[in-house]
Length: 129
Image 1 (cartoon, rainbow, N blue to C red):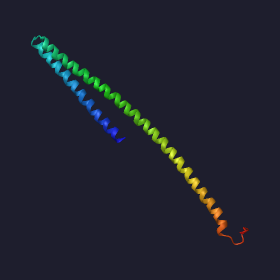
Image 2 (image 1 turned 180 degrees about the vertical axis):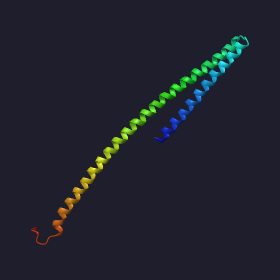
Image 3 (image 1 turned 90 degrees about the vertical axis):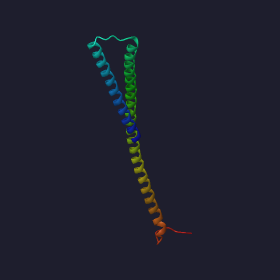
Image 4 (image 1 turned 135 degrees about the vertical axis):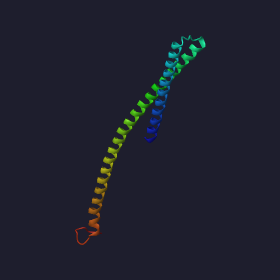
């Protein structure tokens, strides 16, 4: 389970970095847009395409974040199921331990009862031929 916690921490870090990258890209686009408006600049086709790349990058990072969140949800479900299964196994082992202890106690009691008659043969009514 420790490995899954570390994987989850790493995924959380990647999500944070990608979110920050999206925010930086958005801020960069806003500043460039304000600069163009302030200076009455028009973009040529290459500049428009370059700006579209920024949007594509942001969309790709958002898609990656969604995939990471899906993986994290599945990790959480697995951890929950594992804890429940572990609890069931522990409970079953406790019951088994109790039954073993009772079986051992019964076996020892029978041994003591049966061996006691053989070991104490001072006229206890058992005849040997």
